[in-house]
Amino acid sequence: MPRVHELGGHPVEQYTSPNAGGRMTAHHGVVLHIAEGTYKGTIGWQLNPDQQYRDGTRVTTCSTWIVGRNPGEWAQMVDSDYIAWCQRSGSRTWNSIELAGYAPDAPTEWQIEACAQILAWLHRTHGVPVAIASHPGERGLGHHSMDREWLGEEWGHDSCPGKGVIAAKPAIVARAKGILAGKGGFMTALSDDAQRRLAQQVQDIHWSVGRGSHAPDGRLEAITYVLRRHGEMLASILGSVQGDSAQQILARIDELAVAEAARDAALQAQMSELRDLVERGQRGELAAEEVVRLMGERLSGAGAPGGQA
Image 1 (tube, one colour):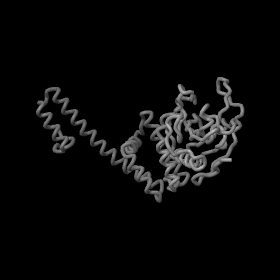
Image 2 (tube, rainbow, N blue to C red):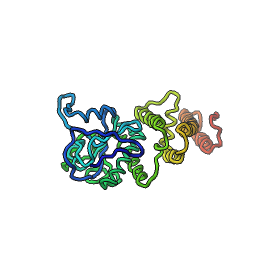
Image 3 (tube, one colour):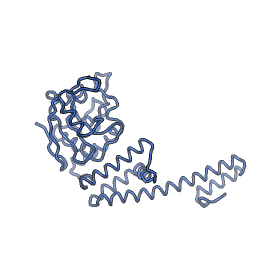
Image 4 (cartoon, rainbow, N blue to C red):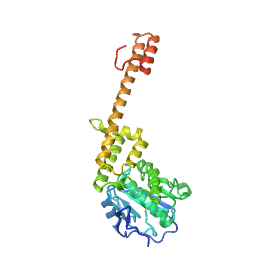
């Protein structure tokens, strides 16, 4: 029976949920969910044969796999040939992964790696395409809220798994293709502790930006700016330094962050000068021709930044 006991050098915890159904009728793909809870808590919930919501509603739910936010946290709850009741009518033809966390959080690096490993395994075992599925009529890597109620495909929970997980689907598919091609991942070159700290830093950045807050010293804002503006460059750096330690990698990120923050500060100073020139023109302190001339000097670099017109 299809159970996976190890992937990518990490053992997979094995459980048998009492809430599973009979045999699946097909294998169209795997659906991503967000657990709205912790790794251990989700395992405990799926092992409960008497599930009840707070309002007393009785349910029978489980997923094929559960993946925690920390490296090494993943478990198989149901044989992949059997129904895990996770997306209602879609459960008979789709496997499922519950990601520990809360919407709209983005998955950690470990969760991306784990989902990619599972997708690659499903491709080898059940012929699931390594592709993004955007609705139940497609096959590959799907997400819970992609159901189409008007066609009778009612999966429930329109807010699951949230924009953070949905946005990570291309990265998961790309990594799964790399696994099938025999390529090692950046995370596999680091110790479990290094993976955990790096994954937490990335999550801290996402959490802070999502709520419009930044670290007092501006370091987090600078790193976020680099990640957004130079994502491909950073990905290339991370992918080429598998022999480096996590400390060396993070030091490179910090160096980029400082340089980018300095450049950004200079740009903001220049924009402030240009706004000041326009305001002086509006107040009648400078003629329109003079405003245009001085702005041209600033933009061409002829005028010294910070100087007085």
